[in-house]
Amino acid sequence: MEKRIKVLISENGADFMQEYVPVLEEAGMTVVCSERDGRTLLGKIESEHPDVVLADLFMPRLDGIGVMKSFEGRKDAPLFVILSNFTSPALEREVMSSGAAYFMVAPFEAKELAGRIRRLAGAGASAAARGVEEPLEIQVTEILHQIGVPAHIKGYHYLRDSILMAVRTPEIINAVTKQLYPSVAKEYDTTPSRVERAIRHAIEVAWDRGDVDVLTGYFGYTIHNTRGKPTNSEFIAMISDRLRLHMKSAG
Image (cartoon, rainbow, N blue to C red; front, side, top):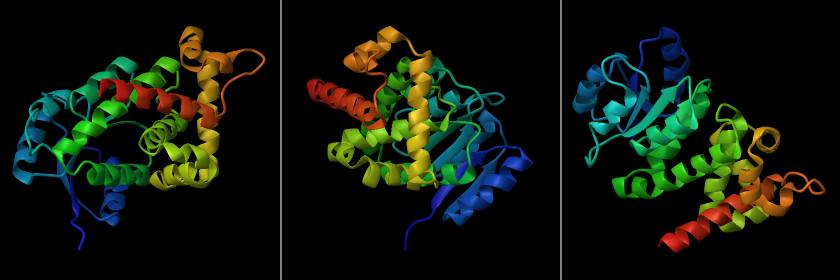
């Protein structure tokens, strides 16, 4: 029998609880609640030993980063999913480098949150495995911010997951429609066509608002006026290829 994922939520809002808790429980999770207060949350983590902690970035007495740093280096540290209504490249970088398994920016759907927790809890069963996962996700996040993809649009999350998949499974780039889009769609409880459209929109936004020098550095010929922006598969392939080369040279 599959072990239920124990999720500790630090939240006072009744609306949040009514919307998200039933969906998480329906997805096979045991949900424990704590007051939205960093110091209280620390005590609750020690007594409840959750697999995953959902915590606001900004909390009274101790913020989400402070809570995560209290568990730095501990083998029994839970996975931290940090929630925020606000983000910036510098803030997201700090949250991820402080030990977050994921940084979710509101608004987001309850099913999306449940899917993300299940995936993280499965992929991050050990501290060693998480040590491999986090740096790559930080690198992808940095690149998307540099290029100019806004973190609040759905295409940003779909792009990030698509690039991560392409880094780990390079051949998936040859089956974008048949494998990659459906895989991302399943994670977010949506359709492959919506994933494709949202990624295309994210790339269009980056091309309209992004730094031309940065875009040229990543995509070269594809941003010439005669060619226009890269296709979804070109974008994902170029970023994932660059990351794989970086990982080889680093290794």
